Structures are given as C-alpha cells and as structure tokens.
Image 1 (spheres, rainbow, N blue to C red):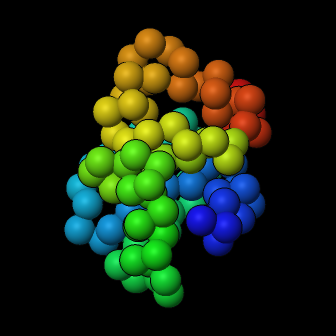
Image 2 (image 1 turned 90 degrees about the horizontal axis):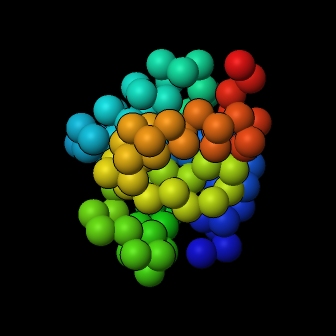
Length: 102
C-alpha cells in the first residue's frame, strides 16, 4: 500500500491498468483528449504489480482496473470517471489537481 500511495502522489493523474483492459484505454483517451498527461501503470508489466492489485482490491476496486487516481485521491473505475464527466465534475477536479490548465 505504501508503494501505491507513493506512486499516486507523484503525478496528478494515475491510472492502474492491465495491458488487456479496453476500459483503461477508453478512460485514458478521455483524459488525454482534455490535454491531461496521464500516468499509466500496467499491473501485468510492472514489478510487484500483483501486490498493487491486491491493495486496489482492499480499496474496494471491483473490477480492479481501471483504477483512477486524481490528485492522489482514489476516484474509482470507468463508471465513476464517466459519471463525473457526464455531470461536469471531472474537469474542475482535474484543474484542482493541477492536471488541467484551461
């Protein structure tokens, strides 16, 4: 959990994903379309990815990926990010985290 906390605190927007997850790509594309630089960690490609996956499960991620963090705070998965986008809360959250300048 400490490693994961460090990873999410170092960048404004972090997505934990797996290389086979199409929803992670969708969320990453949405955020990139706003001009946000997204940091993506592929759990099946990084050292200790399984350990991070277990920490995400303890946070309540189900499914585990995508797991989106904005400003160091766990936002949720694809459904939560899309809900924030649809109710126009996503962009202000990204601005507040310093991930979006406009």
